[in-house]
Amino acid sequence: MQDRQARRVLRSRAALMEAAVRLVSERGTTALPVIDLSDAADVSRQLVYIQFGDRDALLVAAATDLVERELITAEAGDDSSSPHERLLAMARHFARHRPFYRAMLTGSCAFPMTRALNRLFSSLITASGLREQFGDLDETTAKDLKALFTGGTGAIVNDWVIEGEDPLVPEELADRLLRLTSALTHNRPTPAPPPGGHP
Image 1 (cartoon, rainbow, N blue to C red):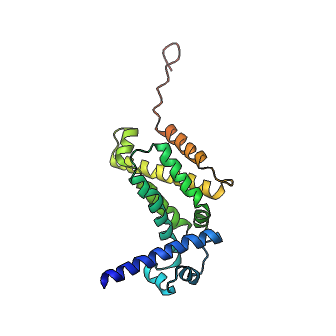
Image 2: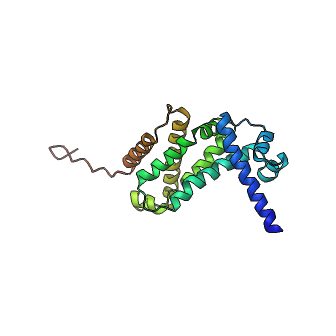
Image 3: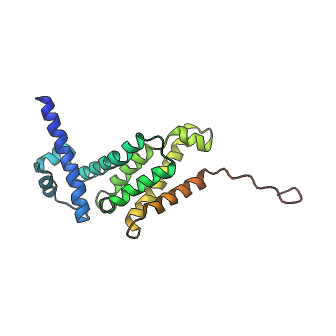
């Protein structure tokens, strides 16, 4: 009996999140009445408040679930992909779901949405990866670099999703981010002193 109820709760949560992605994408706005979301998911309006607290929490949960299912899970299962392939997969995901993310990043959920995406991007950056690129780092510096890369990537992706020309070209974003990463992590040689011996 308890297992059946738990499965029913999971099904209703999944239905609400799927309905949220679909309706936000179709309407291009996060200003959706809760009744529209519950009707689209074929659940009671009260269930939205019981399971999520409010509409915006449901929308952010739906976005987080979408990224986790399509990006984070795929990333975790494929160790063989190159940085370019991973960036391209991310760009394709955001291009494919552009109407949804554009509405989320410009509507009532913009701040919690940006924070949620930054947390998800952050999960892809490891301290060992940072040390591999930048050498031995103390914990605070590693944490700060992780925040810098996460926030910077998020800002570029947000700008591309919101302001980019139609149609979005995932290869352009992937190449842009790869060039930026290379520029930031490239160990430039020390310039040779000018003739005469002193700089």
